[in-house]
Image (tube, rainbow, N blue to C red; front, side, top):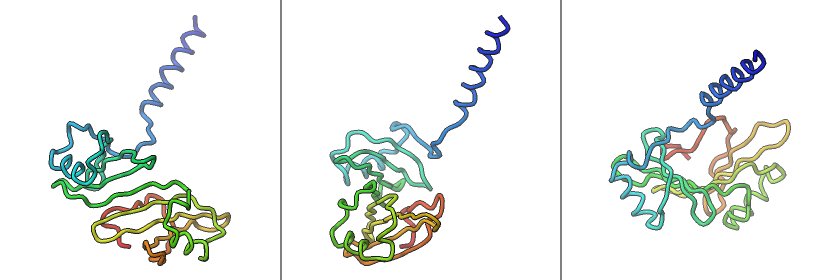
Length: 168
């Protein structure tokens, strides 16, 4: 009997710990809590989207959905204005324009491992982010223009996400 008590107590404590912990730091919101102007903004930019998960990030509504096998995050202001689209390209360099691939392959970090690739579209510009890493060195964020020009090369910092207001 005593053994069963401790077993049940262990299960209850474990459940309490696991329900209290989460690896999701975002502020998920229900579709019903998304303002109509924001929904209209998403539909005007992406009319074929039928399902999206929503989050609040830095005062923006962010719709996350899959489009042609690519995770897509769309940042929309409270007024329904499209501010940015982020396409998560994984680690497949072939998803980048050939000129960007060529620029990376001929650059200083060509031998480094590609950790992540993203394409960003904003009203003012489009750019690609290649995150690279190698043993014994600080990870790097390499920002490229669509024509293959390296715009910015910086040390990758934890929780340094690109937002609509990030200076590139």
